[in-house]
Image (cartoon, rainbow, N blue to C red; front, side, top):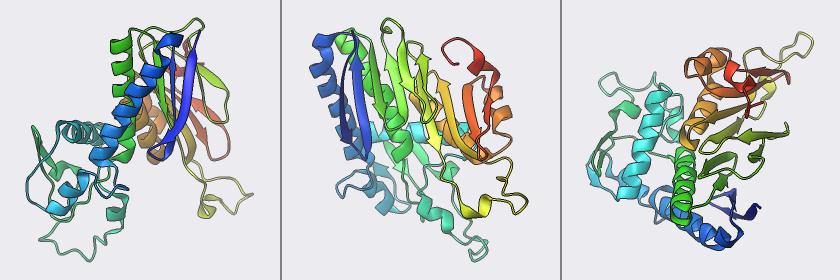
Length: 274
């Protein structure tokens, strides 16, 4: 029998579910602790978050905690895997005027951030915000910790990112896809959904049809929440080529275009992802 608990933390709904009723209280404690540690490291909304020290250093190496080092490593891995479509740089930096930037000072990107053990060197002008990847990383870490410590099956959800670990309950983990029912997640897998709000200029004058190649929602199932979330976010930004890109990585994915039409990768049609 599945027992679960829900609350709100780090700006999103959080849920933990376990296959052993007696383990729920301790599982929630472990999940809360994992979130608190990650938040203290990188939540930019907290004035005491450790990542502010990195952002204020502006070209000076900074020694960071093992947790922030791990979160930054995950964020840089995601940036490499998505060819920069998902970047650790703050969205505020995206508005920099490249035309007005002197050529002797090229705009930095994620590849200019260096991480050596627990020493971080971010170039001058860079402001890091790794919130999204950090939440996914934390969901993975929390689920693994609960499964290992309490020897039970566990599901951890943070917003629209879900990670599982340990064994599955009878009938599998049934996870909701926003606006599209549920899907069964195999033990040890993860799922993430990214949704993009429609913008007025995305509608064509010709009959009011939505612009082709725009995704309104992408759901990806992968081996861990970090990769599932990164792939969903990258696909949302890639437009029409996203399906081919997802196929290259053999990912189970469901994409909804701005006209409401559903597209899936080959792997989505397999059991547990239908």
